[in-house]
Length: 413
Ligand code: MG
Image (cartoon, rainbow, N blue to C red; front, side):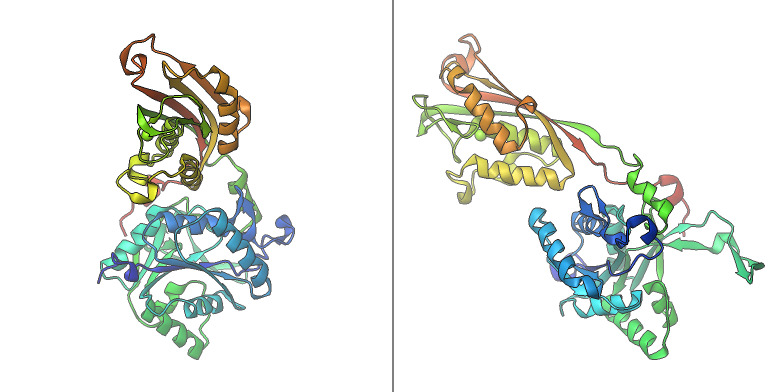
């Protein structure tokens, strides 16, 4: 059994169908999975983590039945704005959580063999945890649940009186995503329907069938937003934005080829450049700086010059794609500083026009885009007017992904 081929990667069900009654007093009636956080509803952050894990084949988001139309419209807009690279379906949920899961399972493609079930109100999910659950399924588990050791002492209580103290070392607090062999989970839901079994997680249904549920270490950061006090987790500087810097460098040789374009601006009368794309050396250096900042390699690996699709392509189009990638990586671009080095042509007459166009392409105000032009005093290849080079430095703020607390994952289940 392997989940490496695309048809065997699990699908993920994101449950966003609850009414969130415990939170309604502080959210003005907005169900928690729709609360906006960092520019997107909570459930979208979980969808993003699923996509970044590269271990999931597609997503089904389960919404409240009475809000399906609006929620589906919102989901489509989110997908347009940030392509997760996965099929993303919306379906209506039911009255209880397990009804919603059952309806979500019915929407999965027939080829799906595994499924992950995740609470839409756990926005701090990490791609690493998604991968761990998938890995356990790959190893042959039919039901997998992330769990943390319990640190509080847990007591059974009836009518305000303690009736027992449970042995803490045998307790675990379970989380989602929970991973399942799809046929087994469907069977478990049918069994629950027949026997009117009501539970709060899917693993319980597997236990009711007498099947094994395997435990893997959960993440302390993978919190479910449940009570009003949990709202502070969304506001607190729990995950401060971190500064990032990227550096890019590019050279193009002069020769009979393409008219010189810098920052999308044509430079009339300048020497021509040899290039596979449009040869915009300024945008090339800028893209490499952006990719460096996002930790995503260089333009050579995304747009190889051996690929006919990029022959003569406008670098502004490629820049758009790179900007999309950096946004998807959680970066907010702050500043770009660019230095063109060329003996010829004279660039002073074009500097403001180029800078203005860069501001437009990067969607930054002019104080955050700086452009310099320099010569190398007739030294080297630029001095001999054999070519042109550009240095680019960009800075950005990055939202770090939540990391697991090593200490709380220390216990071996
Ligand atoms: Mg280049």
